[in-house]
Image (cartoon, rainbow, N blue to C red; front, side, top):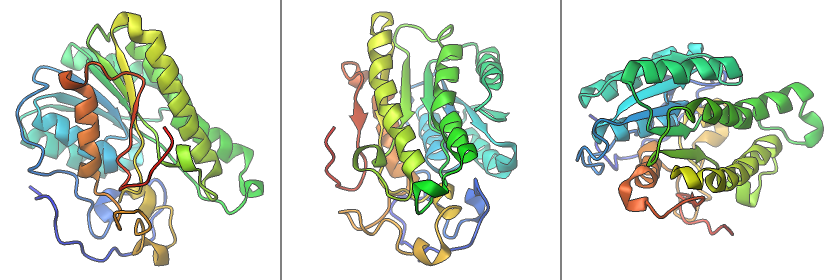
Length: 289
């Protein structure tokens, strides 16, 4: 298994079509670490993760498996190669991993995969809304109606669909964690629609936490800074990939495992009094919220 803090090889800008495959990235993102000690904090729990095939989602799946949880991951059918690797890594830690391919922009599909998770594992304890897409454009005039709709349907609408479907199974002590972004706070000139969805996710998190507080179901979010994932490899011009993330105060992009610990903390009993909040693993960038 991959050790933490590997010597970083220079990233290669190998052009990929969206959504991109982690297996094709050079070098591979680091998605697990011995820093995540396997103490079985979530033994007997079930975690559902969208976009769990690669990037942050894969790292989160592995981290929860190390802590004793069974995992269900959703992903696009074209990402199955990556999903099988995630499954193998989860099973390495003695946990089960349910693969659920399909389009989470479809509400009926969301209902089916949540029901399938409950049927397979008999419970659903933690819902992680992580999957997202973005299509960089130089100007708002280049953002088509189709792109705008697709970005909001995948990044925001899916969260509504999945929470609605999951609420019949979540119980007191369960939690929901949404993936936002540093762009929700500082914006992005080339990711207007994506940044808008991430801003919506912040408001959704805060409002949903208030709505579910009576049920003792906590809702929080994570707003990562630059992270080396397939979303980047399939979006950035190859010549820019080698310097991706160097503008962060810490001087580099994060590896996915360095973000996963935020999700573990927010799902843990230690964070029982944290609700409606956002963690900011962004390499030192100061944001107002």
